[in-house]
Image (tube, rainbow, N blue to C red; front, top):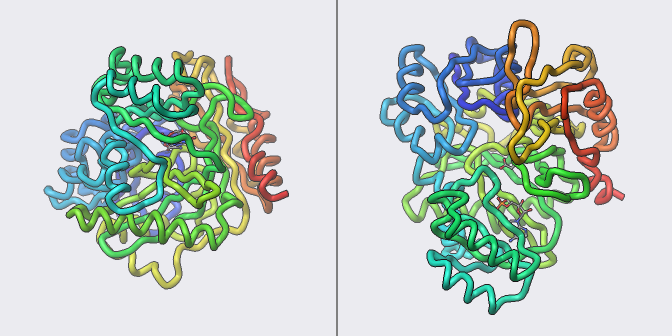
Length: 428
Ligand code: AMP
Ligand code: GLY
């Protein structure tokens, strides 16, 4: 098969890394890819948002399956365009992608179908939002409706912070049109977990559980990022809890969409808070998580390409009996970032130590913001690398991963030193 992966981050490197191991894969392209992806696939200089360019390329190359990594092309309707042209593609349609592209759409869907989530109100006017804030207890959570690269959520500890967030989103327009509507919701307490499932018109097949680390500094301090590291499995999510998440959240979401005329196909990601009242949805993503994918795929023994192709053709039922096959070992991914991230960050720094990591057993380094210049790898993004290690336990995986991280150096490199620590506390 000829495969095209769309995107340029660590998630896409992990997808490409796994796909090229498939017995079905003949050629793998990635648009636009990055310095690490270029070592295992052919990078094509088309932006992930260039739907027309990608469609022309896929037709010309007779691509058998296109796999979309990031949310922006999904929200822009790339799947609808490819499907119209008769090309197989993995990902949800534009209407289904609203689950991530509009938090108001997602919350209202949950309300209509009794899917547990934080209590919320929607506002399209700053005055009404301010009046409402005067009436509720703090902390509260303020969310921009639209896509904001993971930055559109503010946990306000005080009324002043809540009012400031409203002013920034609705009047300062820091997220542009994404902040024209906002949600003010109850702040949930508990532990978080990410549940990602593969969905087609008839079947849901779960991936292994995982847990992201959103804040930039150790002990969950500092601003939110795209994700600073992940581990899989999440020990919190045992079989019983998973069954509850499946029956109260995942299945009603897919069924609810279907009842409203939307068939979901693709990866569906539910960010979940395990509260004292049970699991509740924090957010949906309509794609694989980044960096969760980097911690999940090294544990997957099944052929990813075979499964994703089946999902694009409504044949996931072929995997119902057996499910997917997983390593019992745990996996940890530590993200190395550029100085300044998640704000403005430095670029163009030379990365050393990558070759030493290649020699390490049970270690793989996924590239996110890198580019190759001759033999050198240079930084060119906020999240630069996802250093990933397997181990017989989370503790062993943490150990392996940080031994690899210690070999990597670039000017201004930052990473959290406590990825996976929460899992150890839960296991205690
Ligand atoms: P989201 O983009 O909606 O996942 O929000 C980013 C992060 O904000 C989540 O991973 C949570 O850590 C936090 N968050 C979002 N909504 C809530 C909520 N209602 N209560 C507590 N934390 C939240
Ligand atoms: N790791 C969270 C996300 O992919 O949005």
